[in-house]
Image (tube, rainbow, N blue to C red; front, side, top):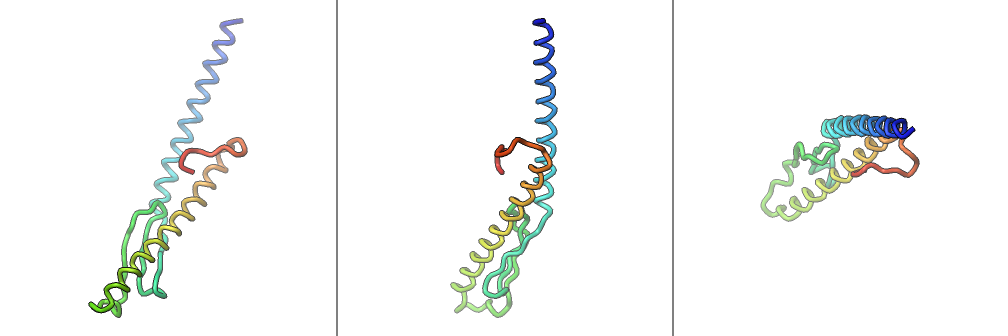
Amino acid sequence: MEQDRVKSMEELLKAAQQAAETIQKQMTESQSKLDAIEVEGRAGGGLVTVRASAKGRIIGVNIDDSLLKPEEKGILEDLIAAAFNDARTKADEVAGQEMAKMQQGMALPPGFKLPGM
């Protein structure tokens, strides 16, 4: 009887380990997917744009030629910061949506949140 209980515990631990490995694999795949999704932050009516991955990596910056004047330096700096922030907000939104999709596919108990989600 004791051996049956030990065997049951071993099977339960093995199943838990397999589930953890599956979740880790899905998390890694999701993180890779997030780095491939692009969002674009805009400021100044599109005079400054910032492209970023949904993971938050900045891919590129585009500045309209009309802003490349020494007297517009302060405005340009503000617009770049605003475009970065807009891109970051969009990246966070997309990342949240993607992670929620992944979590739904895992059949976790209601209210259970994986770290970083």
